[in-house]
Length: 111
Length: 113
Image (cartoon, rainbow over all chains, first blue to last red; front, side):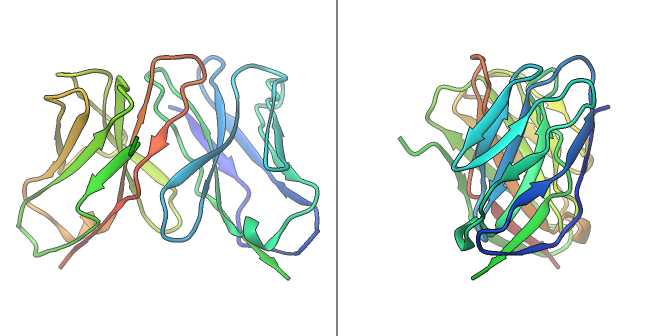
């Protein structure tokens, strides 16, 4: 079945630092790829997505590029803010559009 | 437009008790899902449905049953709760359209004593 390897946390950065969270996956075919974010005590929210190879998803300053050759979908942001503190999940989608989640990466941004 | 709602938000059960979690969506989505979230393990798929009257097993279906009698509702049942089912449960839904983003409910925190 599908699987996801996500950069382990926790990750602690200072405000305005550069962020990279690595994500690699194994899946059948060419799935759509997603990054979800979970703020404390809340459900998951879509952060960005990419539906085909070489697509770049972007939102709120975050970016990730669908790399078919390396089966990766790394999340980046050039300058993090305290409000970006959350747990980030990488997930490819399956045949019934179900998501296979990584274990999540806890990000804490210090002022 | 409320999106995806879940009831109850919190519940404490004793071992062996039963309960039903309700998920409702008002986006006319075909696909619905139940996940559980445990510390350090991300979310794991329990059961899902690709349309009214259909259900299928996910990664961790044992100890759970589901029903999708109406398109907008997806029920998750625990017939005989066990401490291993202590978790946070999330419901999600998505459409058949391109890009198929899943929309999540706020979660139900279940504790089984």
